Length: 288
Image 1 (cartoon, rainbow, N blue to C red):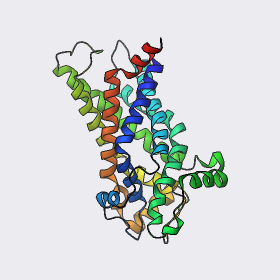
Image 2 (image 1 turned 90 degrees about the horizontal axis):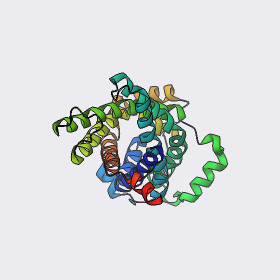
Image 3 (image 1 turned 90 degrees about the vertical axis):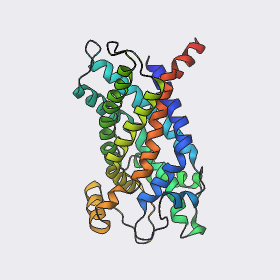
Image 4 (image 1 turned 30 degrees about the vertical axis):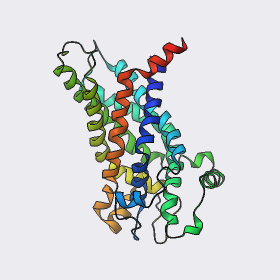
């Protein structure tokens, strides 16, 4: 049922983000580096970072994001299926629909998350200016308003829709291999073995994450409001792409790719575990 799917997605987001938050924070800071290299890489960033600072906003973002994405994909797949079968174009279209739906929630929460996560990087060069999470939130709402929280919505859409179009079909087909190897080829409703669903989620998440990293770099740069000395501000997606290419070269579009893969892989592996265990169905059963 839809409520069960939403609960499953929400629980997956809460558990997954708690596990991978430090790497997600490192990804944001590495992607925003221009000129002065505060961090030499992921491990250097983690060593210099208060790991679970600002985790609440990330968890608040992840729960509804995963709930909407996973539930929407399931709903679209059911609508597009015929006789229990879904062609590849239908899988891609269902992923597109899921990515589009989640942006409504993702954009404002990502906007706030990025300001909080990047504040520590700027404070490395000016420790006296280190802001609090509450201060950043109040200032953002005061200067930008609710509408301003949707800055970068286009870039977020550009990242999340292709991600879902890659991830969901890839996961479904990798997961089907697990079901087939278990001898359930004829039963399209049968589940793959537990560990194969986890591996399929991690594998599909890694591939999709790396594939859309250039779009994630652009989105992160556009949504970062506070810039360090000598760092660029951008007028939009095209301007951001042009300046990054001219000043930092093509390799800049892959900044944080390893971090992103290490964040997304377990997130979606955990999501498939939650679905496998039927957490949402169990909760609804207890509630009657």
